[in-house]
Image (tube, rainbow, N blue to C red; front, side, top):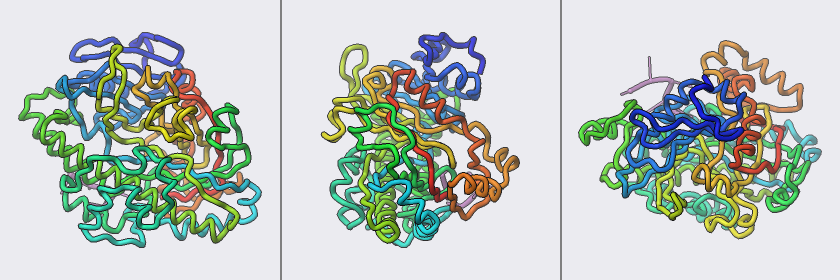
Length: 476
DNA sequence: ATGTTC
C-alpha cells in the first residue's frame, strides 16, 4: 500500500482524513512493514465504510486486515441508531460468529507427545471436518429454533459441557434478542445435520503447547503456564450463517436502492438499524451467533470425551470463547459521553479492557482474553484486552495472521501432502480429508502472526500474554 | 467462510 496516502498518527496508527463522501476519518492500526504489504483494497474498502450513514468516530482496520466482501476482513465500525445508523450484512460477513475458544487441559507437552498419534487420530475420527461435513446429531426445525434462541446455554442444558463453561463465553453463552423466526427455512435445513462440525477453510481444532509467556501477572490471571497444553477450536455457524448472509444481502441490496441509501459499493448493502429489515437481520444474525456458540460447545464436549479416553489425567476447562464476525450492541464513550452503538467486527476480536462489567469476575481485573489463531502449523497468541482498545477501537483487536495469498495461488504453489510431511518432521501432526485444503492453508499463504500481534500491542489495543505452538491440528 | 458456481 502507498503510505503517502496516510497521516502517521503514531508508530502503528495510520489515518485518512475524511474527504469526498466520507463522514468520518478512517484509521488503520499496523506497523510500517504490515502497511507496505497490505492490500490496496483495504484503503478503498475502509474509506467506503467511513461513508456509511450514522457511522461514529471513525472506520477502523486491524493489523491483519485484507480484502473482504464490502467491508475489509479486519474491519471495525460502530453505528448510532439515533443518527440514521445502519446494519450491514457484509459488515458482519458470511461466517457469522466464526470464532475461537481455548481450553486448558492441565497436562504438559510430554503427556501429549507420548500419545500424540493416537490423540490426533481419535480427534480426527470424532470431529467432523470438511466442506459439507455432517455430525452425529440431527435436529427437527422446532428443535433448531430452540438452539438458535439458546446458544451454548442450550448445549450445556443438553449435557454438552458444564454450567461453569458459560461464564467464559461472550454474552455468557447466549446472545439476547435472537429471532429464529427471521431465519429462512433454507438456512435451517442446511444446519439440521451440521451441529457439532468444524467446517472447512481456515477452521481447525488444534492441540497446542505454551512456549512463552510475556506478562507474569496476566498469565497468572489467565492460569497459563509455559509447557501447559491447550486446545483451541476455530469454527463458526456453518451453512446456517452463510445462508442468512446470502438471504439478507440480497434483501438489503434491493431495499437500500428503494430507501435512497447511496452506496459507494453495492457489496456494502445495508439497512437502517431502526427499520424492520434491519431489525429482522439483527434477530437472524443473533440466532446465527447462538448457533456458532452451541456448535463450539458441542465440539468442546466431543473433545473432552476424546481426552478422557486418550489422556485420562486431562481436565478440560474453558479459558474463553471469542467471536470474530458479529454486530453487537455496546456502550462506548464517544466524545466524552456514553452512547449505545452497534459495533460491527468482521475478522476482528472483541478486546474489552480491565474492569468491563461484561467480563466474568475471575478475569475482570486482567481484561478479556483475546484469542489469536495463527495459520496452520504456526504459532497462536493469547492477548488481553486493554483500556487502549476501549479508547481507540471500540474495544477491538486483530483476530489472526491475515491471508497474504489467494487460495488459488496457494493451491498452485504448494502440495498438500508435502506440507503435511514437512510439518510432521517438525513434530506437528495434521489430519485433514482435503490435500487441496491443506495446500490452500499452507503457512506461507499467511502473514506472520507474530508481526500482527506485535503491531496490535504497539498500537495499544491489547497486551501480549502467551505464545502457543501446535502439536496436533484437525483441519477441514 | 460456503451443499467451494445464482
